[in-house]
Image (spheres, rainbow, N blue to C red):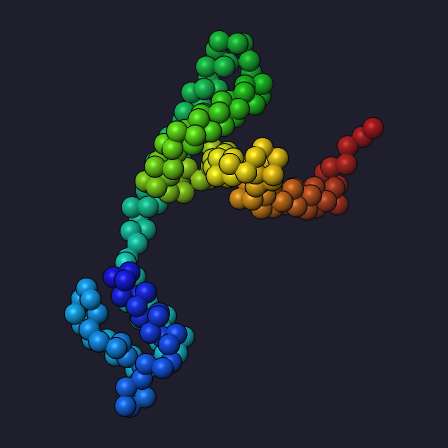
Length: 191
């Protein structure tokens, strides 16, 4: 299926392959399917329709269910870690929140280094991308990819390529919400 699309794209780009009627076509039978493809028109709309017809359907409900389960499982693990901190170190929920996030980040970085997190993300989908573990995975995988180029010019420079947009969006959104909060008279603080 994929090979057909690649061949089709290559033919579409070559205007020299035209039959006597002026319609682009493949030069001969394709190797895998043995079917001669004729293209009536190569407009972008026709190409999109043809590509959509050959695109495999996505099991949306199954993907949503997997994301729900895996994201919930990550949150359940986080809650268990927080309860452990509260029970063993006499912390309240607010004090236990930061070490819990740090442990979840550490777990996701370790799983990323061993290549396990990517396999989990293939099955879980968005369930592993949404929590803080997905953010840690994106930074760690970028750092691992560029480690051969050195610490400064490789890892440190490229670590924020994927996560940079998340950081920028978070800072800008927090700034805008803070300004709105101040103008509504709920913020500003008293010195």
